[in-house]
Image 1 (tube, rainbow, N blue to C red):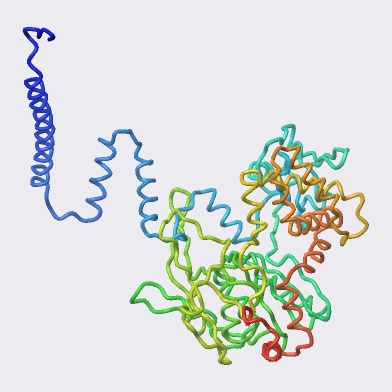
Image 2 (image 1 turned 90 degrees about the vertical axis):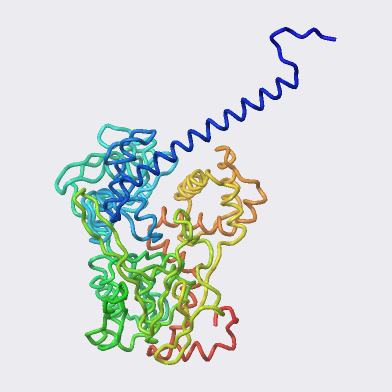
Length: 549
């Protein structure tokens, strides 16, 4: 039996003492907590008084500034407070615009900036010219599609981002910028004077087959209605007997320009959109005040998941009044209006001030995600099932739907990304940029061997593209690449045509694969009035699958 030391208590006494020590420790914690609580209670009794919102806010800010474990300067505290306030509104369109974001917004609204007029993307770590802007200094000087910008001044652009390149090229009108491009094996130097560059809202005006005119509207900036009016006049003079207005990918812009575009195709007295602000205020109704410019011109409007805001105002008004047939997939669903309030900081507050409704009273607003950090999922259909969506009647009695975007009269095109393309995107993951670089490189290699803009993409070209991905160590499994080959071939063909023959040839090639454009062209051919388009659709309804009726 082990001998116990005189000062060592027996095991039972040690356990008792341990329990007592634990009890004392817990008691001390409780006592400390009680004293802390008593201090807070006493303090609250001393200062308790009805607190207005401003006093409450000031007290919280003061406490954080003086006592928070990490020191924060005053401006940081107020920045966080502003962010928290806007966040709690749970409105993705209400936000603080820092000075640089406000500048970009103003450029988008005005459609004008000062620079050299280049659309740039990054390929293999270098800025590459996607397209010189028509009428800009670069186009006038002879910069070409596919030119690689390697120097700005004497500084290499290797590793520059698009934003870095854009900042280097922009500056006050009249200022000078020097840059060097690689074109094949040669280098070409340019010294240009920066100038005001106008980004046209309508960038393509085309007469398609059988007298169908085509115009695209990319944004609703300050001159959109005027540019569209000029474009429609020009395509009608070319012989257009009907018109397709393409709003796909158009994120919106100025509400007034959306109204002005709708006015071009509606009659005087017809409503366009109604704004409803906070309860108790009078609705603001925008009504056409002028006769339409082309009353007998049959019209089709194309929309997709990226058509938003003012695009939806136009599509909704023309649909409600049976002025245009709408084709594509359900639009984004932004049924609110914002005002921009400049702030003394140099930034601005973009604030939702109203929700808008189509002429028949539809709200197409898509509910924001519950999680303010969540992004809208643009890869899937944005609308609710028709069975639970509110139904409305157009002027002619046709059924249209509210909630979750503008639902086309004819649904055509992929409502979701094909599974094969999704699998390829997942396999590429963070290497998607390397895939784009490899595809652009392969297209550039084909430039000298192409005989025409419609040259096919061969299996050998796809093999070369895959070999390039392997050499970059980013290749997906071959079976995934092969399963997506129809879409890869299509993208490679477009890029080859654009680089070798330009944007016009690229557009023509794309139209051959554009199911929404082809369907619109089919419905418009042979029609003489807007009413004829709907009559033609009804006559063919028996041949149309239920999914697109």
